[in-house]
Image 1 (cartoon, rainbow, N blue to C red):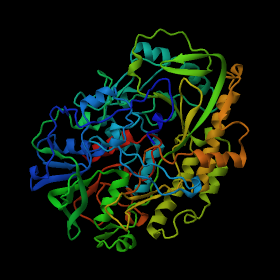
Image 2 (cartoon, one colour):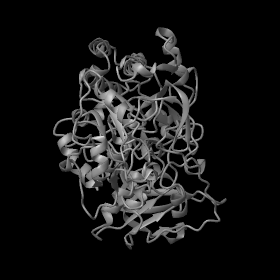
Image 3 (cartoon, one colour):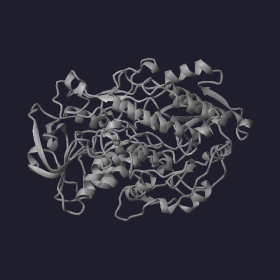
Image 4 (cartoon, rainbow, N blue to C red):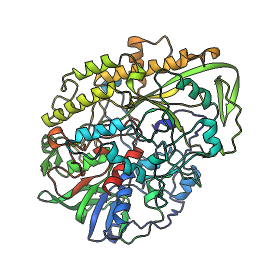
Length: 614
């Protein structure tokens, strides 16, 4: 199982299947890499756990003025420039750069398990994602602030400067912008020449997208904002995280690690952090062990100022729990001494849900788009001469990001029934009262989200072929990520609890019905005799629900929420500064702090979080 764009065939993005071999030299330009624990110092000002999207960003920012020393400890390895070049910066399909984690069986998905895909390399999941560069809406980040409590600075106005700071925007070429109606708001984007994470448009697009775009634009309620970076949703073009010169992947390693030569910035790879060390409730450093070899003697390093966990929404709660920070009952079951009882650690787990619906517009003759043979037709694409290079296309650069009132006229009924639920009805029976209180606040906010046009409940990738990934961007079923109490060194126990709240199933049904209307009722498509190939128009009602249970993927590899930024009494784990409740000198900087999902891919929000605290 790989990131969702790699599971389906698009004419604009081919999957590179790559193999890492030890025979290839690693060509890292100026990164200060340590391969042996014996090379590290006794102490650093900051010890960062995880060299992923957020970890490398915050480490770069902490060291750029030369005043602080930082050690980053990473479980995984470096991938070479040769590998990146061979893949053209596109998708990676090598299991050697993913963690090998499988979820628990999901009862509402016919007891299917799910691969939990996380990037395992320097750069983390920013090295393996679909490079979609979007943010979500103003309403959604205002929700982050609402759940954070009074005087929160994590509303839209509070995070926008850090979105700007996080990347360097490159506007599309004039010919491309004119042919495809690509617009943008320069005030929403940063163009700092010292920022080397890039948000870039390819130089070419498939003109078969244009009729699909025109048909979506005519759907009732669809808005066309200037872009997706200004806090509004609708149908819009967006850049990808690619370099504007080479059109290779632009990610945390190339932005915050390569070409940096600082004596105060060191990265130790292939070592596993076991736990945070404490003096009372003050974090003093971390304990770690080598990943390779037979010697598992624990090693340690001191942090004079802070320990920063950036291990991601799956491994950050595991490290916290192994360190004695988490639900008391869980820690006692695992015979871990309790440092601070924080019931919310590992709870509030959320991810985006998706599935694929298929359509064909019959055409008498097969035709070829790039290297993919296509047997179904589409409305004729405009005859546009584009001087750009098709190889610069990394994946979809256009999507419809839609609120529930546009998806269905039943939105008020769904919102009202969700708001009336007993908050405990669809959570685990042993849910702590503080976590339950936090979910009750989430439920009230989310009911408002269901009524809001400017909350991205549905994402449809608009492409040149028929059929689409249909994604639920805000779920109400919350899962858990907890240590394996019988083997705390094993990978954590990941339970999505997918569709455990039946509202999520209703939402996915409504999403599918919206796409059916788009394909089957559009005047643009009727002349071509559209036909639904998957699941098929005859599949309705309970049969459609069962098809969803059989095919739904409970993750788009955007896990969040397991160390939520909320008050402790509301099931929160970190405060507004992302410092652990009840603990000194321990901070979390990664997707686990998000109190609820953004209606967007989590890449850009993770960079923003690191910039805001770095």
